[in-house]
Every structure is written in C-alpha cells, then in structure tokens.
Image (cartoon, rainbow, N blue to C red):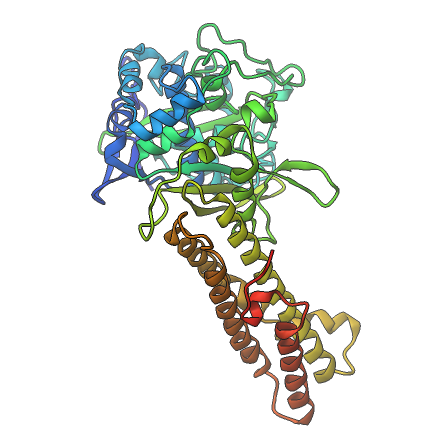
Length: 533
C-alpha cells in the first residue's frame, strides 16, 4: 500500500499538464514516450498515436486536443480548407503556442479555487464523502449507483497526477449514469444525480491518419459560428453553470471548444505527496456535472444513425449480443451517402492510386458497454478507408456480415436437428442446454472476425482503379468461413457418444448444414459464385 502525506502548510502542490509529460504516446519510429499537452501538439506529426490505458481514455484525450485546437482557432474555416489542411499537413504549432500563453492558474490541476477540469465547490463534501481513487477510473469504480456499500472505493490506491488527469477527462466524456456517493446537503440534492456522459451509450467514430497530427486534422471541422471557450474549470470566470437545487436544464454548447471540453461531471481531486516526493491524488469526489442539449447535425458529426427494434433512430450503440465488426457496413454506408459531417468530408478527399500499400485511413469505432449503471467493457474496432472506395467497402462489409450471419444460423439449425434425434425424450426445460452443447456458433463467432478484417484489407489493397475489387476476395472469405464452421460443427458433434442414434444425429446434422450451404437460398459466395447485386 502506497504511503502519502499532505503537503506542508504554504506548500500547495501545483501540476500543469501543458508542461508535464502526462500523455503516453507511440512515436513514428515505434518508441514509447510521455508528452505534455504542448509537446503533443507541437510534435503531432512525429507521433504515430496515443497509447493510453483504454480505448475510452484515448478518445477522451483526442476530444480534449480537439477542444484546445478549436479554442485556439487552429481549425479549418470551410470544407475546402479542411481538404487543404489534410493534404498539406497544416501545422498545429499555433495550438501549442496558444497553450503556452494561457494563465498558469487556469491550468493548475490543484488550484484552490479554479482547479483544472474540476469543481472546487465540492471541497466541503470532499472532506466528508471523498473516497479512494477507484471512484475516478471508470473500469475500477464498479456500479455507479454508489450509495450502495462499495468497500473497494475506500481502498488507499493513490494515482499519479498524470493518470488522474487522464481519468478525469474520461469521466467527463464517458461517465455512466447513476447515483453519486455524497449527501447533497451542501450543494443541493441534484448533485447526486449522475447523468450519462456525452459519449456514453453510443459509438464514437474517429478517423485515424498515419500520425497523430493527421488524426487531429481529419477530425477537426469548420465551426458554424464562434469556436467557443475551453472549459478549464467549473468555477472559471464568465462560465454560467447549472445549480444543484433543481433538475438540470440542458444547455446548448457555445461552439466546438465548449462541446469537446464539456464538464460532464463535478470532480474534485485531493493532492498528496508520495514517499518519493512525486505528486499524486489520494482522495476523490464525483458529483453531477453539466447536461448538454445536442443537435445531431451540429454536435454529433461522427454519429452513424441506426434504428432500434421499435423503430427509434439513434446513434449506433454498443451491443452485448452483436459484435462491432458486424456493423462496419454502417460506417461505409455513412461515407458513401452522407452529405454533411465527417463522412461527407472523407468522401470528398480525391482518390489516388494506393494499390498494394494498404489504407491511408482507419475508421476507429469505440464504445463503452454497460449493464445499466455498471460499466462492463470497452469495445472497439478499426476499419480501413481509402478515398474513392466507400461503395466497394460497403459492399464487402455488408455481404461479409450477411454471410457470417447465415453460416451462424446454419450451425444453430444443425445443432437443433442433432439434439432432436440424440435426445428424443428431452424435457422442454432442458432443450436449450442440450442444443447449446452442440451449437458451434459460440466457437464460430470469435474466429470470424479476423477473416472479415482480412477481407476489407484485401479490397483496399486492390485499389480504386480495380473495376471489381470485391467479388473474388468475398468468395474466398465465404469459402474459408464455411470450412472453419464445418470443422467446428464436427468437433461439437463428436462430443456425442458413439451409438446408432447419435451416429444418425451426426449424419442428419451434417446433411442439414451442407444443404444450407449449397441450397438456392444460400448466399452465392458460399456456392463459389459471384453475387450479382
């Protein structure tokens, strides 16, 4: 257990992420390093990518870097200028210089009245209700209904200031809904109502370039008005914040800098000194933050809209039952069809020959899967994009997903046939369990993802100059998946003890699978043919 001690009177710790190495990165030559915010922006084109603790933390840092760029007016003024920025590798140094010129007090993580990213009004409650740092890290907090007995939140586990800074950014963006671990007597009862973060419950899509600089330029966009101000602190001068005496009235962001740096939580961190003298955070308090009124067209430019089973349209969401790669076609459909936002800008980049050298960009999709107020897992997927190939990639991903779905249903059909013959006297209550024993879908799905990514890579490698870069790779993909599924089915059926009935069950199940693969209703690619869409 780490030992910490409070700072001596008159020696308040100060910590400024503009100058402190606080963001883990991978350089273009493969080295690992930590950069300050200023160094990150000044050297963005020498860095390959961020390397934070989780996909969500990476997204949160990208959001903050975008907010800084907008606040410093380091952003394109039109879609035409955006294309020039991407093509000409516009320098992001002005954002770094803007950071250097900001008041030091506004960037102090432990300032007594305007702590960076925090709400100093929680000070009185921190003394009474503060917990260990597990509350700050989404993956460690557990269920966000934190008025229940959460012993793990009391554990002494100090966080280095840099880790606490990044975790706070992530809380503001992805914090799940729930109940805060505080009474509300000081600030008002509504401070305990934790609203879901701006990106909670939806898939955030970021266009990735070859460098961090290219990634930021791809995801910056022309403001439709003022860029707005960066939210450095809840109590910053000129900020109009909600109170906690009554239900929050959602506010419209005042420009993209405000949007991308919105304080979705009230957070307060208590600094301490670790045994070796480094600054750490040892106590944390989290309460309700801002609630935003978001316009899908202006504020969700990356969102891919889909319909629920009840017909409600909403941004693509993390699903516990459907893998993210099965929805890749929705991303390509957005690039192909959208006339505004991120995807329209990506489509506007002129095609150029890249045969055999891979995709210049990736569509990186990230979401937080939660069971009500309990975060479960980060999910992510990266899908290649080359200018001029959206229609080809849509076809490959759509057909690829449909083929995998069809094979999985066929495996289920085979398992049902085998169970009906092998267990003729089976009680209805036991049927699902016996079918599951013979159902190879659970083996199949994890092995289907890599071939799907290889299919997309092959399509991109053939290049936009190929009249039909999809059909042949798609047939090879389908036949490969079918062979894998057949092997997995036979392995499951081999679990039946050898006797006449079970031999008959195996034979009927295999025949049903082969009929499904070769029937007229099967996708053409499974019969070795090219589909005529």
